Length: 409
Image 1 (cartoon, rainbow, N blue to C red):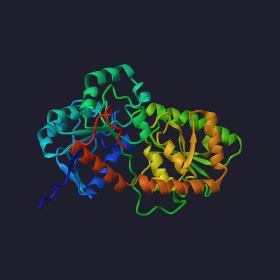
Image 2: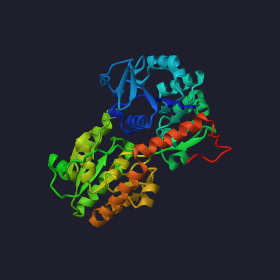
Image 3: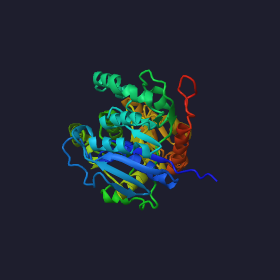
Image 4: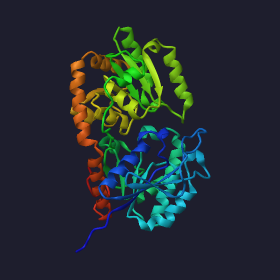
């Protein structure tokens, strides 16, 4: 009798520090879910904890840390801490690549991920690349000339040599730049980790000193220009001037761009919104779950967003979402009637928020729809099984280039 051996999978990511947000943190959720399905998972990452002078993570280096059924190796950032680069990580990968079936590499245009793909090819280790939105034309416009050079010298070869490109929604795959490569793609969404027990309703409002039963508008994400705060703030100012009752919570930070974060804080403090706004900084744990649950609506009017993990978390909490049509899961939200969709301008956003705030019954209906959809489509168990199927297809050579096969869905 032939007994199949467990898959041995590497997850390689520049950092899993909280300061880098959901796209990096999702590696932990995925790894735990894969481990529950019997996959042997090893995460390779660095001790990076921010790009502007923060001390590194206080973690053991160069040896495995066991958690949730998988192991993590942290490596010192050296010699380029600013770019989350680690020669030790690459040496370890070169020495141990033969012990694994496949590598899942998270991030493009990041030196350690770029070099890891090169090492994997040299060691004949199949790998999947997850670009984290970096192939979006809007993102490629940032530092455009540098990225064009980087792609020509390095990243195009990595894309061409990958077994697959992992996108998190169909729209991201559709619009992404491939630099002329025909690598097959797979669409696997991100998952959300639901708490075993939600905090009591209203607890977050009480903790932050917000009046009970006041409609809460929640923004919870990185404080970044792409998130559309320049649309949201004037929209909320207009609603306030019309006499609508609400409280706005701005939850998030941006250690990588503190100047922009400070600019937003000053703008709100000098605005009529100051009297009905709470800025919490980064939140986690029970307060985060409480805010997601207590919000009347969650809002993210981003100019581009390949997935939006906070959107999925809000949906899982039963909170309807107001998102722009540049958050690439907008079609799923629209079809599930799990929220409202706006275009990226102040007038449309104001109108949609006005509509959402004035109908509590519709908020509840769409919130229940959102929760049902998230539990069905964004559970880690379902995503782990889909990911394992992709790994098996890669190893069996069943994924074909885009010019000879339909894109994998």
